[in-house]
Length: 85
Ligand code: SF4
Ligand code: SF4
Image (cartoon, rainbow, N blue to C red; front, side):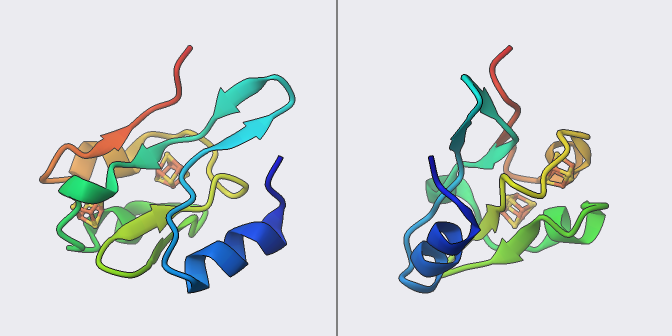
């Protein structure tokens, strides 16, 4: 399991951490880094400030994401996926 410090360290290193195994199920929305054009639209919509800019794309902090789906609705690249149910 990744904790907050792991996320921060990997973000600084340019490693994208879009998923976390949390309590037995895969949680949170995630950005497909290869398709992201770093427009920032998703971050502007996020009510929990879970999305931040990383190296060449944006990433979602899974610990802060509440799965509201607002980011997915505004992404022009359609490169944000919801959690598997
Ligand atoms: S699903 Fe909602 S809370 Fe999660 S990153 Fe997207 S806008 Fe933020
Ligand atoms: S809205 Fe989509 S393309 Fe724009 S920064 Fe977010 S994930 Fe990337």
